[in-house]
Image 1 (cartoon, protein in one colour):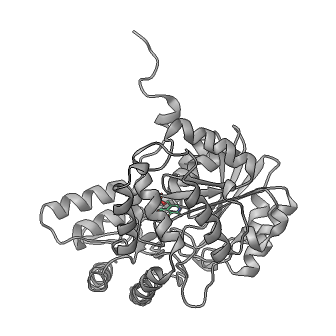
Image 2 (cartoon, protein in one colour):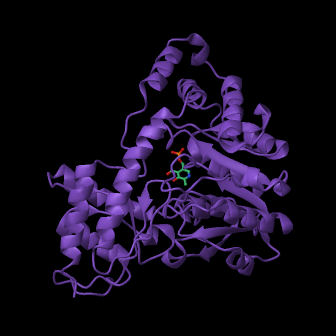
Image 3 (cartoon, protein in one colour):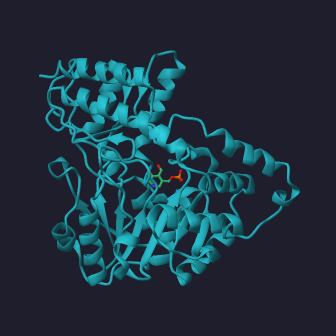
Length: 402
Ligand SMILES: Cc1ncc(COP(=O)(O)O)c(C=O)c1O
């Protein structure tokens, strides 16, 4: 009998998402009839706008879309993405440099798979979104964390990045607005980081999926436009999921230099081929339409954001810097870890999150999932009443900590 492992070493190394434990438990509790309020969702709670759905229905009826189409995306969608990128980011790009992917997630995987050789280092600001480490690892890359905290509103400085740079550093991952912290870099900060990257010949992979969700005077700046010196060493990742409430449709894209896009397209042509055409036509309606739907969502998110921030900061032992983008708050709970609560003494934020789920029927994602224990990520993409009820329950329970 073979002594070789049944599951390959490479794939066995992929971690189970740390969000899953809480999520699975919350779902089981809900199914058992318990009134769980979930702050775990990474998606807008709104339906996809009607005009987008209508475009999909029309596409489903058109036999042209029942067939294989070019692996890199429908030409009209690539054109519309190029036009949208000029409109929203001021970045001029030809349609041939757009690759349409199965969600932003596939764009993340393909970007790292295309750029990294084994041992190449990627600078990643922690807290980070859970998918990046796995994509980097699968590509053979080495993630180097640049840890930030609430003291700077979760923003990294050039000095911190420089301290983490080595001769193996190939890529800086730049994410603004950030999941999980909601941090948004100003134009000046973006320029300083971009110029530093250009000066050292680094590639920048920039995830712009939350570009339209900024609040309170914060503005999204595309590092690709702000720092032309980066030249052809920029890869932009984006998608329709967050802007148009289209998480289930699975359309994202990657924009990069011709050689990178060609290589990534080759890879995709063997892995998944074209993204479902019905979804591509829905995405075409989305990106070529206006931004009124996201403006309405942003208004609701902004209201909930302020409510959540105010309520969280009223809880003793909790501190939450103002999230300026996306739809997440990232409060620190470090002072509460290790305290006695309902006869238990949680030693980590993961244990505290578990206790909160059991005792207050509130689901939060512990910071362990994002590379920084001692925090919670709380999405405010849920109804206003549930939000108030959920944070009230959390506050009441945590007030008992001794
Ligand atoms: C920062 C970030 N990038 C990319 C994505 C990918 O989104 P999707 O694959 O749904 O397009 C997400 C989703 O949560 C995200 O938070």
